[in-house]
Every structure is written in structure tokens, then in C-alpha cells.
Image 1: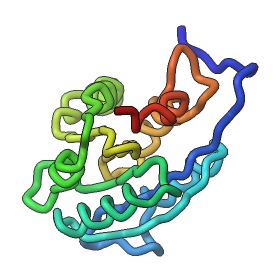
Image 2: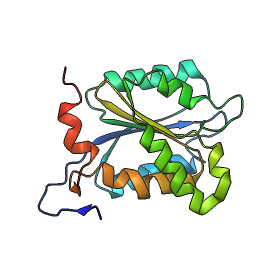
Image 3: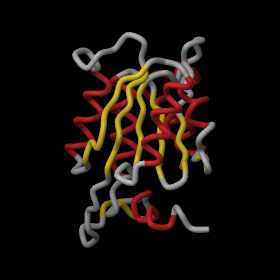
Image 4: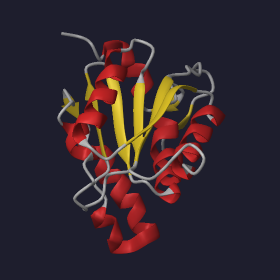
Length: 176
């Protein structure tokens, strides 16, 4: 069973938190607050945080700015992953991936199945690498944010997690 190896150093990463919503503000963004709080509690830095509308150009432009920023290692978005016409986060993110991480969405849905049953099929959670920046798109509910962070991302963004994790591979993401 995978576990934390305390002999390895914890390496904090810089994470940008993006809420995708036509209606949320910083006063009522519970999912964004939950995610930012968990990021900081784990020892990482919330390097930036934004709320933007459900629209591909807005999402893409913000993500591209963060991808180009050497101070951002990871982008985690919450919202816009459902099936309605305005849910376009996966399309925006996937267009930027240089390498998709299909296992992220698969694992998220598998874990969600135990909690919400077949309703998990409506989630289009996705993950990928854009250049050297990791990107993850989560559903907009606080429950989904907690599940994705607590059951997947908190360990994968921890250098001490064995047998492998995203952080230890970060220096190699730009290899040619």
C-alpha cells in the first residue's frame, strides 16, 4: 500500500485556484475557499486565485497566463465540468494539455461512485500537463473538491508520497 516516507523532504508547490462560475463571487465561493484552505493546510502556497465566467476564451486566457508564469506549478479549477451548455472547463483545459492524465478523471469517478453512485458518470473531471504546469479540473461542489483533494491530489502533490508522485517528476516535465 502506498504511504508517506518521512525520510523524504516535503516540497511545497505553488498552486493557482480557479473557480469557474457565472454566479459566484469571493463572498460565496465555498468550493474555491475549501480548495484554497486545503492547499494551504497541506503546506503549499496559493500563488493566485481567480473567479471567471464559464466561457472557453476566458478560461483559456487565464490558464495560459498561469502556464506562462514560472511561479505557478499547478492549476486547479473548480466548476464547469458538468454536461450543461455552459460547462466548458474540460474543453478549455484539454485544448492546452501537452500530455493528458486520463487516470485522474478515471480515479476521481471511481472514488465518487462510492459516495454518489451512478451520478458520477456526469462528472467530466480531467487532468493533464500543459508544458511544465499540472492542470486539474474538478466539479464545482464542495464535496467533489474535498474528495479530489483529500483522496488524490494531497498525496500526489507531496514529494514524500511513495511509490511515486507528481512533485518528484516536476523537474523532468520540460525534458525534450
